[in-house]
Image 1: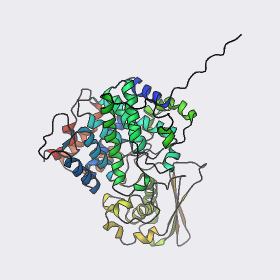
Image 2: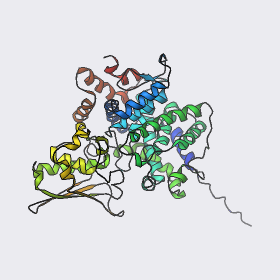
Image 3: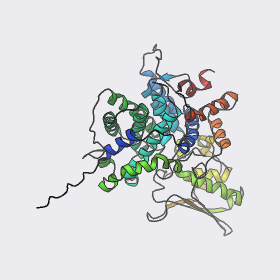
Image 4: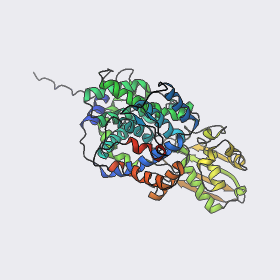
Length: 467
């Protein structure tokens, strides 16, 4: 009588994440280090500019109010970027993450709606307050977090998760930042599994808060909770070590759990470990990523049409399926809401020839001609089966002409990257000009290249801490 061979048991999603986080070799990847240089200066720059926004100011004030008024910052505290303020790592991650996302000028992933650097870098730089770190350690941890962000989003899948109204930066972002933190701290597999389980139970954040102060706080909370998760797990705090795939776990709650997608999670993690460098964007314009391609189209059309927008009779904008999900479906009532209005950002691009930070004040919404041009813009989505990832703008003139722009990669996309000079110009628009800030840009740009462990907190505080 023959005996049936045992059926191999599928490795669970959490175990695949743990194996990836703890088991990957530590070789450096030149392509990821090169990308991380730009993301470091960009994320710090937009966070410094964002630190003065009401959202970041209120979060920082609340954090400082939790500590005794005469408290002295002990060793191991983390910098609030671009300031003399030092906080505990979790609090610093909350403030810096909120500030990094406050202007919606932080990085994006073209394949899926997420802002990885605004969550990962506040987490990693806060934990780096505990010990000096090398550029290779930061690069490896950032790449692990970037891979987890994308691979877990695929497993949900992202379209289902985001379609239910979850803000992926905040939900999956907690897992990604926790995975990156476990890698940076070189935690073992058991601790890493518990840390991921803790983070999964903290996940939250809804799209309904887009256009409010709570939206940028989503990034800060994800970073803070990642610091908390690894800190608790490292002390022996427990969670379900199979939390992602368990009944009522992360994949079940936040997605449409499919064992076939889970089975290839490890392969997708390995793909994204370096593949993320072809799937990131440093935004050229301070507004939602869903507006970026349309802005590029508008600027190009303005060059052909000229500044006389009165000749425009109507504009039809076609986005990918789901492309309108993060956008406002009513006219913006203030500058913050305007960042999520494609009609507003496209109108500004056509009227002025650029889209700048100053275009998102409450007063800017009253600019002459903006409302009238917005009324001529119509948005539609392509069917799900059609090609994703590009925006088509069709401009009709009163004399019967049709001008068309089809934009696949926005300016700043990894396929159409900002030049070093453009990156520096954005940084200085955020932090100001002058020799000190030019030197700061150069120093931040080389952080991923440090061969020796370095204390990053003085560097992250910048010249403002000495001014």
